Length: 332
Image 1 (cartoon, one colour):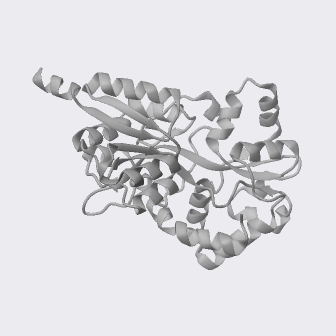
Image 2 (cartoon, one colour):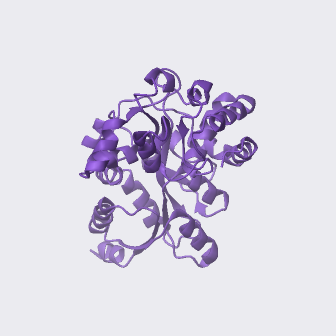
């Protein structure tokens, strides 16, 4: 009983860029299970990083939730995370979905995944012509490609992965080819790219899988029309697999409550939390062996596709170089 009372006196300070109703169930269940209350600060990724930097050693943050590997890596590079050791996390989360291990431990861990897929207009583009990321630079797609900004973390992570495989010289040529194939200058978000393909403005576009799943789940007639007009490809199934990104968490550098922070990280890897963490944004679980039953994800292809296995930590180290390559290509 004294141990429970002590736990109830503890508060975990969580800085979160996730804003999904399902996450509330995770937090409430963690508190009921452990007696550790959660005090949350919500913002976007940039706001959270700026706050951590401004607070410095005085920050009350214990755990940080961000929604992209590139963002996790950028915050890590600024020294905002504390490396931890956890046998439970080692057992649950594949190493390619975590930061590179150091003698001190691992700084950040992915807890849900999403696929970077290709959508296309079947009236203008053949599926076999967009079966790989590499084909997006083929001149036969000239004037058909649409994307959001090349510098957006979702694209940066994909480009860094492709260039890790291709090498710098071929990677630069590939980026140049993407720019040459643009139907219009990059703009908008991923949903805008899907709508642009459905409207005929573009013939092919890149998007994260959960944006498609959201449209599938929508009851708006205009969203149903969009889904009816586009098709989806999980790229590189015959070769290296589809690029996977993550939403993840890290222990804050100046946590005052390390044990509770690690305990919360481990809880996020549990099958219970994985179900809510992934389903809340129509994503896939990160933990080994965990399956979810999401009709919207099934409608766009399910979860049995081949995934790329290049570690996201390797991708992260390529980001500054890739940004320079984008600048040389004129990819806005």
